[in-house]
Amino acid sequence: MTALLFATSEAVPLVKTGGLADVSGALPQALTQLGHDVRVLLPGYRAVLQTLGSEMRVLAHLDLPPFAPARILGGTLPGGVPLLVLDCPPYFDREGGLYQRDSHHDWPDNHVRFGLLSRAAAVLAGEASPLDWRPDVLHCNDWQIGLAPVYATLPGGRRAATVLTIHNLAYQGIFPPGVLPALGLPWDLFRVDGVEYYGNVSFLKAGVQFADRITTVSPTYAREIQHEPLGFGMQGLLSWRSGDLTGILNGIDTEQWDPAADPLIAARFRATTLPRKELNRKALRERFGLEALESVPVAGVVSRFANQKGLDLLVACAESVLALPMQLAVLGSGDPEIEHAFRGLASKYPGRFGLQVGFDEALSHLVEAGADLFLMPSRFEPCGLNQMYSQRYGTPVVARATGGLVDSVTDGDQAVDGEAPTGFLFTEPTPEALFEAISRAVAAYADRRLWRRMQRAGMARDFSWTRAAGQYAALYQALSGEPGKAT
Ligand code: ADP
Ligand code: GLC
Image (cartoon, rainbow, N blue to C red; front, side, top):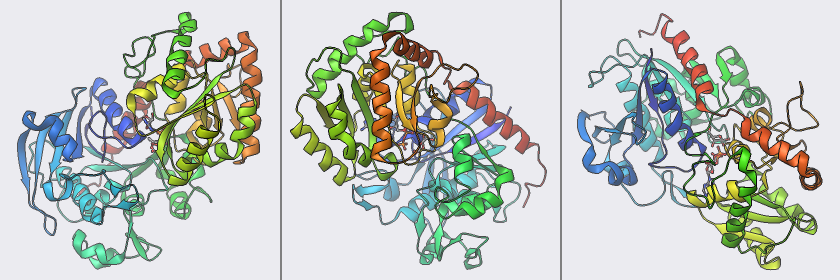
């Protein structure tokens, strides 16, 4: 059994901007169910304090200059996993996003906000922790906790082993060198085998440099990031550390995302009652203002509108797609240019192209349940969750062959060992290649038996966290047995 401190900057159902929150909500729970002693560390954002407020008690005071004084509050995540909240109102108790003041501007003090989170994680994982609980392993997630392995190596006695999971290498936590004093880090760490990264400080690079082990969220992405272009400048360091780098495909929360029990969809269904999916399509069409067209499939999108997601490819081929028997239902927000282009399509093709701008958890379930096809034309995708939700909801996927999409979607043309296809993959990041894949899907949709087989194959797949949790547990086990964690 491993005692694990899982440090993260977001976790469902408390705070979420993307898949990291889903992972942080589900993986600790799956590890707990395997018998491990897990605690989650999360910042005390306003939403967290408001949701858990009176249930939390003060466990410790942290005075870690040059950071503002903070407290550790104890609570419980809704799934039952013990939660440690880093309460520092000047840093976290504010209106606005988790990382951004508004959709265009990061918080100017992100370095100290997540510097403190990293520092606190390292303190709680070390000998000097004010808690009477000591983890064997500190699991850090993304750049926000990237400095924790650095702080953990500063003198201070025995410490936990450190694992850093990269959920997305495109976000590297880069700040000018002048932030070092505000982070309480010595200038001698500003070197190429320290926290320096092309003349700046990078929290993620620091984590990759100092963590005992590095993981990322799919085996394919673990290979892709060791080379250009997906190494985003860190390919050299990552391939140098390849012996310590593994890819573990994420799971999904199969209770929250269960078409047979989902309270957020119009009609619950399972593989044996697939015709009921049509009731969800009806509800979806109503929500997105789509016409009730016989035998025309609806393709769904639920996504951040970010360059990563390749939605500009969809914009570029949308007119051709809408010339097919096809309707589109798009839910998302982000990049104003993409949003503008989608709004243009929605007004040009009323009844065929439906758009909902915003972040709407409940509606995302209805899209998965009601769409016939799901689109993920990502330029890169470390893992991706929606393609797994889709398959579980009997919705074949059109996806670009990258990262976790390769590891979780089976294309009929590429299936090995008689594996049943669950989607359509395309390779080139071009509108033409996306359109070709969508056309293949439309042709397959017309073959009702083939389509049902694809739907059932997706629904039968095991995307539960149990598999991934077992792989993480083996990694922790190997690490906590290693000597030499005393500094
Ligand atoms: P990423 O973390 O890169 O955005 P993932 O596929 O790993 O991509 O996870 C995205 C998560 O965020 C999924 O749970 C998805 O359903 C959700 N999501 C993204 N955009 C929206 C939205 N506009 N409304 C509701 N949920 C969304
Ligand atoms: C990131 C990635 C996404 C992954 C998620 C959870 O947000 O963009 O592909 O699924 O993290 O690991």
